[in-house]
Length: 331
Image (cartoon, rainbow, N blue to C red):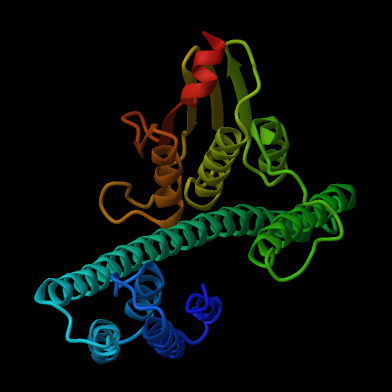
């Protein structure tokens, strides 16, 4: 019990703890000789040194842990005691080395998973920022141009365009501030709850914005409307938002149709226009918007197709299945 007292400090000074255990062990053995020279106290002290120190220190500590208790005996110990103490010391050191390597591997895997999670979150935020900026800035540009054109001959129409421009700018700032709050989540406490992420219920709003921006857009809903998981609803909103942004930038004078079909096992989106403008390729060198749409669809186990139509125009078709848990609940 006396020789075990230094173990209280083994995590802070493992080498000194081992030395104290050896000295106290030699002292007690000198007064009351023990037949067991490599006891549990010595094993714990040596194990701690082997877990925390470099190889040369571990080798010297192992030699001392085996030799000092034997040297403290009044008579030369028999061979069986020497072999037993040596085997015990080797077993402790090998066990400590195996556990040390195992924990190092676990820590490396944990760090790798953390790095992957950070990278995935950065990609998600990059997609969100691209979708927000591409949609709102394009809308604001078209509305500003319309307001400038109608400023003299139709001041009321110009005023409505400026009001819509202000609303779109405010919405863009709000959504970007929300994403920046995510980045600062670990640095400071938010005083107000964040605005909910947009979902499928916000489609009518961006359809109205698209019409006010000079791109006639219709919304068709097929099937029985129902609530969707938040992540899936956000994916639906962002895909439609990006498709409308691409139509405004590339379709020219066109009309756009947005179709949302609720199916038993998922949602099908179709955004098509009849414009004749040039488009970024989807399977060749895609733009960031199309890459973002494809990544959102793949993230939910869905598929997406984007390309020109035979009769002219461009179409984005996305099939997004419900999550497994949601699908089982509906069945």
